Length: 111
Image 1: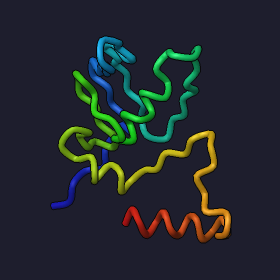
Image 2 (image 1 turned 90 degrees about the vertical axis):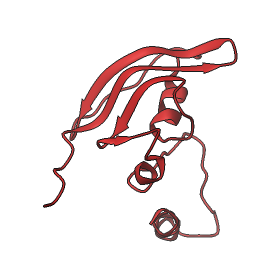
Image 3 (image 1 turned 180 degrees about the horizontal axis):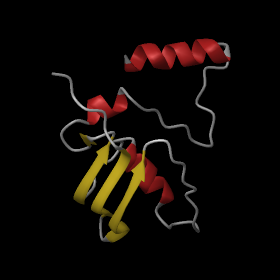
Image 4 (image 1 turned 180 degrees about the vertical axis):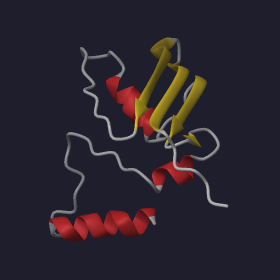
């Protein structure tokens, strides 16, 4: 019997992230269904980058539950990383490779 496809792309339940004494995210709860798009906006220091880093499993939430494609970010980070990529505003490309070669490299590295 095969697993059912996840209904939601992202599920956040009371997600909080703390760096030392400073809270970057506090009790964030939301659901992003598959096929939907959101705009993430806010002033500097609002937690946008922290949220994206948590979704990409680059950091773990201090508290709460975070799921991407039905996978738990705490217990299945490698499975999440195999299914997504994070592209930031800075270029992290190998400039001596073509765009296709850069994409193929990322695909190979992430399985």
